[in-house]
Amino acid sequence: MPLDGLKKGKFSFSQETIKQDFELLTVALDASISGIIITDNQQPDNPIIYCNKAFENITGYKRKEIIGHNCRFLQKDDREQSVKQVLREAVEKGEMCIVEIRNYKKDGTLFWNELYMSPVKNAEGVVTYFIGVQNDISRRKAAEQEVKHNQAQMEQRIQERTKDLKESQEYLSSIVQTVRESLIVLSPDLKVLSVNDHFVRTFKVTREETEGELLYALGNGQWDIPELKHLLEQVLPTNNPVIDFEVQHDFPHIGKKLMLVNAYRIELEGSFKDRILIAIEDITDRRAIEQRKDDFLSIASHELKTPLTTIKGYIQIINRILPQTADEKLKNAVGKTSLYVDRLNSLIGELLDVSRIQSGNIELHSEPFDFDEMLREAVDSIQRATQGHEIKVSGSTGCTFNGDESHITQVVTNLLSNAIKYSPDRKSVDVHVAQVSDFIKVSVTDHGVGIPPEDRDKVFERFYRVGNIQQRFPGMGIGLYVCSEIIKNHGGTLWVESELGKGSTFNFTLPLNKHEGGHDGE
Image 1 (spheres, one colour):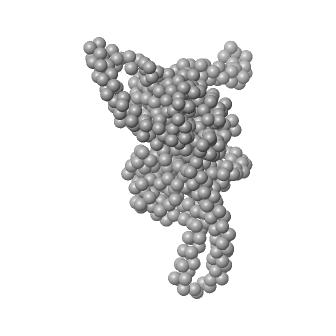
Image 2 (image 1 turned 120 degrees about the vertical axis):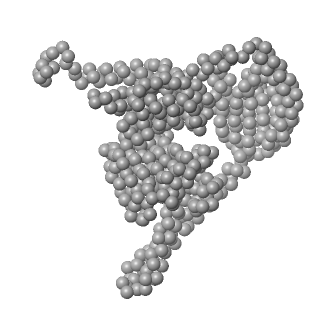
Image 3 (image 1 turned 90 degrees about the vertical axis):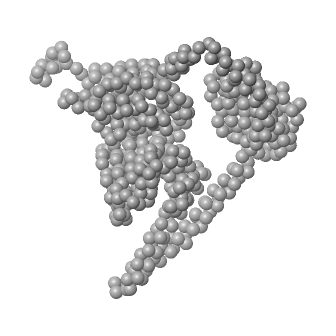
């Protein structure tokens, strides 16, 4: 049909109509009680490019933590489920399937997921996307399991558990009394029901002046904090724990201390139902040690920077005045000296970054820059200095990103250097970049030693080094920490997927929209 015919005919559509239909579709999807995701089968590893609000509610993850990931992240370390083969075959054949699979929420809670997965094909019949509709069927699964047990078995188990509880009551009580943290048990109205011996010794009080009193009336009102009140009042109705709440106060009898408070609902029935357990840890000395260490790093880094700059200047002068006929050993010595000065300068720069991050003084100078060009320059720089590895780059974004180009370059350079460092017996490192929904995603893959499961969440901690790696490869364990903080300050996420002995993939995403930026309180 000619263009003017479309305009006059009954099938004409305006851009405004299409936009309104798209917005209506988005609202409808967000209104669904089922979790809905869309993955891009045209991208490596089939990343998630869309999720609705229900999916966030079911999994406990925020959208920026979901976009760019493969769906397997919901299985965490429980990936050897037989149903995974059904999913793999459906993806490979481009077919729909319905499965029930064990997934885990962000806080580690197991939930059963009923997944309806369907392919989306283009005009040529090629699968371009997959749509997954997910429902939490944990209650149904629990009910099915309960039906399997008859009344006699249930009564027997209850009797056995009652007997075990009675026999272990004194044993558990003795454990509580020897725990090296102050413990308080509160009633629903936040009155102190009991405290352990450590609490009595730490705060130099008696049980008589503590038990039966309102928590906020203890001492000179050190726990009477509006924010802490609000959090504690939500523990029972919402089952949300209080995690690492800091209280700095001049306590009676013991002086100025920094206390770390954690509170949880006691998940028991009967007379122990609806109680709150509070654990109080004195972190005064630990925080002071950390502060002294940070102060030392800051001072040492600044003091080393000036003489190192002078040494580097002299090395450059020597390089310029060194005659072409100079002894080859002398040239090599000067070259190696320059190389190690650069390495030391880079290390001091990372220490200064750690110091700025800890003090909250890290500065971002955001300006628009060509992201693909930045990535190419960073790869070229590392490739020129690396003879034994080939860095292969795939994908592009075509995006102009508004951020601190030097800091993002530092992240890419660090990830590439680590990939080369920890895969000495392999010859290639793979880099993939793409725009995934409204995020930029970069993946750096090596085929080296890999990271054990128990260490994957810790590698981004300050000064943390994997046990079997630190013996083979030197380092201080600060590079990934700095990278993580830089990405966080840009509103993105950095994570690792790894298999021991087969290599690691470090991924990070950066939001293209400002409202997804850092410091949003999520």
